[in-house]
Length: 166
Image 1 (cartoon, rainbow, N blue to C red):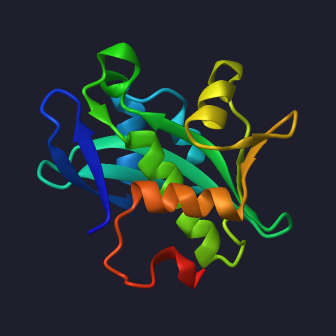
Image 2 (spheres, rainbow, N blue to C red; image 1 turned 90 degrees about the horizontal axis):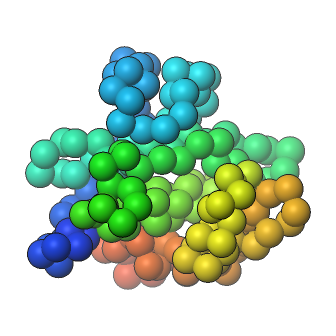
Image 3 (cartoon, rainbow, N blue to C red; image 1 turned 135 degrees about the horizontal axis):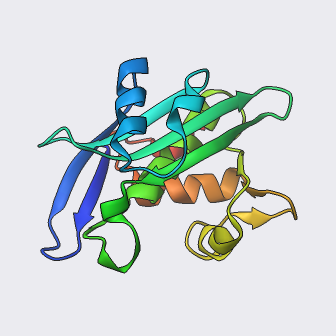
């Protein structure tokens, strides 16, 4: 159980896994130009990749920082591979799965699910409408309740207690 992506053409569910990337993998992602942003600048932070289990292909990447002073996890960067963005994308649930993973990380760090990010202006509406983030003016955040909703939507757990354990 865990994460899955949805093939928009066939409706097939593709099991996926999120794991921390090595320095070498981060540099390969940076050189590949498949993902926006300068990933080589994220080496000092926690960088995770979302992989399709059957192929091992990394289709999404997120960089986070556990901010103990603010009791929240900051999403520094998040990106889907360029071929899976916009109207032409074939796979769905990439960003949602990564955000749910960050929410789980926040609960595990005893931050009560609080997650924040500073979005590009054109993405504010997406983070608000699709993922339930609230706008604070300079950043957006997901609170405890919203983070539980994201986890329930994007992460299938075999744990009977589920997210209620947090």
